Length: 128
Image (cartoon, rainbow, N blue to C red):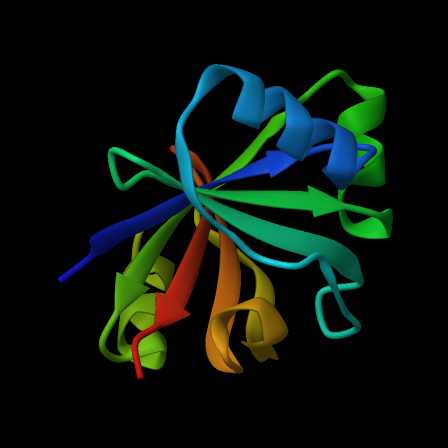
């Protein structure tokens, strides 16, 4: 089953974006900013008081979409078996695997994969 995990927001400056979010929302958790060479991006995770997780992404991975003025980058779903869900998505028309499963530093090296779908970019995060 697909279980909502977080939204991904592209930004040029993670510290500045964190401060903006903290001015408007009650943040109950804030990770350190880390660079993930597998994703070629700097990343941070904020959890709001209502439980919403927001992943902030900056760097080369999002440079092109930021040039287009896009900030909402992806929606992430946690899954029990990442390869099973990749295969399910690939059976659908208009689904492209952008990034095969790779360990993600921000999520304790759990595997993540990115797919382009009719809904936009979806990240799959394998639960440990």
